[in-house]
Image (cartoon, rainbow, N blue to C red; front, side, top):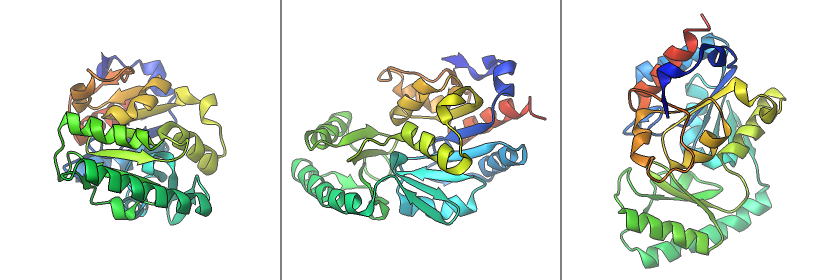
Length: 258
């Protein structure tokens, strides 16, 4: 990883849009600061597209899709897109209903194997996946996290680990597919044809696919706690953690857009 200060000017000048994770990238302890919100405003005022892509539930994300200065929020790791008051789904209702039954069975299997594991507080607002809390309000050891992932995978789910939750779902979607989907739906363009015009900012292992795909990928400084398990690191890293790191990204980016 290179220091953010080494992000070349010619690369920054090409940027037309920003993808960002939410938890522990924009927020700290689940709260976004006024300074970070102002940084999002500055991106919008500069004419850049701003899209959040998160593992959070659609229910949790809906208020922020209209309150925050973003073009859209893609929730549940690429399965649901929130564009202001509109909600789009990557799966049809019949598929979602079938998968909800299967996911309830997986939650039961996890509860039997790890009675001390808890679903996330936003799990009730989830429509396409499940989430087990490992660091937000309840703590799980690395061994327990690995056991939850194994149970999900044993039930043929895709499983990822964010800074706070273990997410599991049925389907081929993920954050990168969600990014491709929202660019097509929102802007009518093909993301893969313009990847060098976007930057991705994240903080955890569930951002690895995005780090690998975008040449302009940035980890806020708290990504360092996961570098020992990441096969694909972000190209750049900020000096500061969480929202303050995101603000540093915005300052660096907009220094060549003024």
